[in-house]
Length: 353
Length: 74
Image (cartoon, rainbow over all chains, first blue to last red; front, side):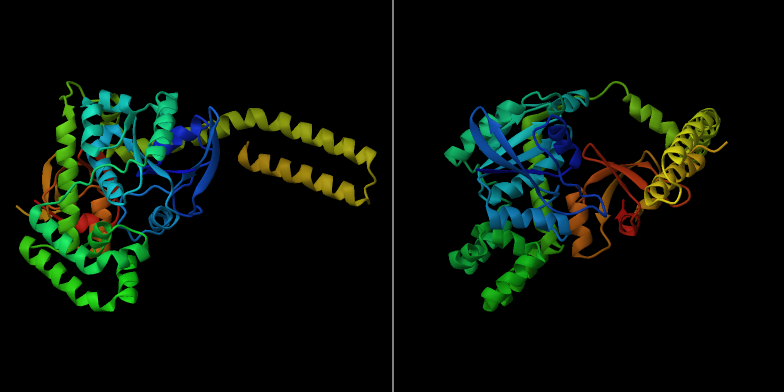
């Protein structure tokens, strides 16, 4: 059984890694390898593979790492997806959940950082959210391991039952165009691409390049209808069709959030915000930056001079010891002596007097 | 008054009226939770043209990219 982890921010999955649930996790930072990571898990005799996908903001994307995550979900069809949501920014996180529900893959929601949400004054009715989405929602504080075993128990049960949740529909006029396009596409095209018809129709209205190219190759005759429906949507709403669909989904997510959450006004600004007021000030911020840099240089120079001499003496002692016991013309002496000189030279640079 | 993001004063709320950019820019902004008609607050701007930090739907989003600076806000 394969369970894929999908989130839209790195820090949510990091906490699962810290608790040892995943061996490694993939990074979306520039310059890092874009790939997914698998970890075998045995939970009370139930074995499964956790697949950690790169973080994605949306299924409609042109970013390389996000396309990789999407391709995995569509082509490999995991047995279940765990969508890790940041409870403290639930309204934003729900947009991806709505897209995942359109994919019709069994889904479980991990409502992580529930403590952070409470600190921000966000109270979430978990039962209501689960009812609205039609899938289990498990509140967790993954960094403390709270709720994580329950999450995986629920994931295994859902994978066995195959519960794919509820589809949330867009406004009536948009939904009519989506349905018309889905009918024109037909079951055959969608099945060939491995996605539900409605999902494919929405991706095409959102001008998804990859799906557009694939549909053009399979059914080139539909492109004129696609353009007609995009123009119709665009004319009705006065903005490009992709923006219409994206705004509709955003609105659905906001409505869902308002239905399941209450936000209490906070009496005092959090400590971090109070500090930020000075550290990130328009002008004072640069003075603080200079101060921090000066502090680090001062630490290096003042402490360095006390540490450098004993360390270098130690290296010299070892070098002398090696010189006595090894022939100065041997290869081993050259290598060992070179290593000592290299290390002591490095320390001399890092810890200057 | 409609202006660009970099001219909005710190601490003031603003409404996104227009996004200058193509499909990919709109897609990226959408992913970050920024849509037309959304209300946001400019938290920080830098006087040397550094990042603009905004708060939208309870999330702080920082960006130095030109498209976010040049988008129009009311």
